[in-house]
Length: 295
Figure 1 (tube, rainbow, N blue to C red):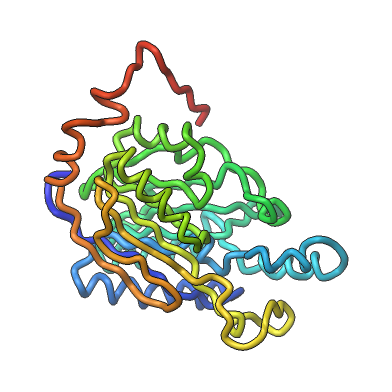
Figure 2: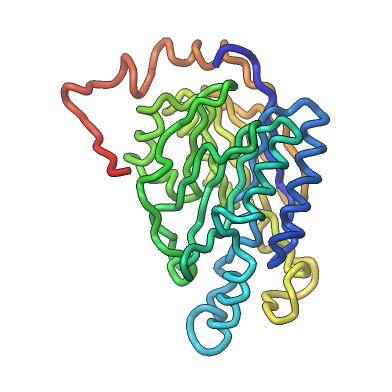
């Protein structure tokens, strides 16, 4: 990083099970944050078109309900390449943003949990699939690969990310550190206080800025044929935050409501924190430890 960077975390609700309307929502947010000077925006895990929470277990565990719920998700998932994925790139280009979004990605009949980063030129600069779906997620998603386990140069700084509980995988984190990550993306559906203990640690361990954007979902937003609860009960309560390289908050956490967090990332803070500790630099021993990633 050479210059200060303004970033945003969009803790907003998608149009559940409606891929095109959810992309409309991305366009609305991109226009808003771009108008306020943001240069990068992050959306939550599996934002397109919905995160399949553990409330889905009764739909997924067996019987006809499992088939219908999974099929409903598959039919509204994102294919890459496709006109819909191209449109997301066009939104990034139109607003001059680096746009990072979580998506259910459909590929030859299987769904994957993907993190996508589009550049200001509209191109897909980073494409990573979650390595290991967590618990009930294994009834929904296939396993990812080592592709995208690296930070990419953006002009704002080196940007990379991991999805939700991938952030608990030490070697996956180190693959980002070794590639020089400076802006660390952590889209998630984890809405616990304990998640923030991990985010603070990762910010201190990586000596990078961390953006954690969390799912917010209302029971009332689900269609009648995927009814999870009654009223406006929150199924995902958010908790998005932006952290500095010393583990302190720059914005958030934001709980129980929609909202967009903004923060200015000062490269001076990044370099100050790396004076004493740099996980892949002067505090690394490549003569003792080596990581091999099969990308």
